Length: 164
Image 1 (cartoon, helix red, strand yellow):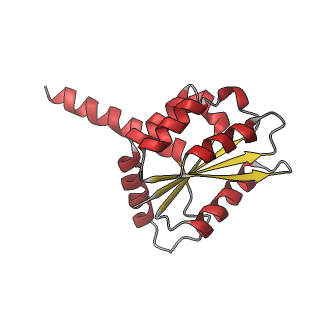
Image 2 (image 1 turned 120 degrees about the horizontal axis):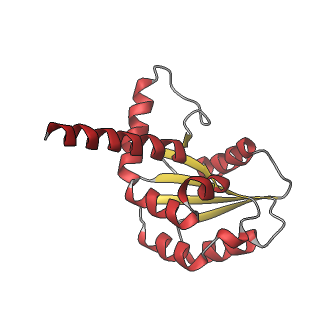
């Protein structure tokens, strides 16, 4: 079961460690990445192209005129739904990478480690909705899921420790 992750970039040339991302992408099998360049004025797009050339599970959407984050995510989602059969599709904004996860490398590692938990959490959310969701309603925030998973993990650890 493949999971799609859309990552939105805008002028993040300095935060992208190409060698790390390439090595990570070659190891992971069940994640399809869509890197969306939202009209970067630096060399972000060229770096993303270099990653795409070496990784089969990476696609790029190049937005030539700056759009809102929501529109950029929708562009990536349309691309992913048209090109891949994905059961789960999440997104993350690169600006969150530095605020919450100390950079791009950390979020890539975190997604890899918690991929199964992310899918389980997404299934749980989908089941809780009575109506069938549309394309854009099915999208989930990877950062939000990881935050909730981390909180649940802390609560579980607290309960476990309080038993002893």
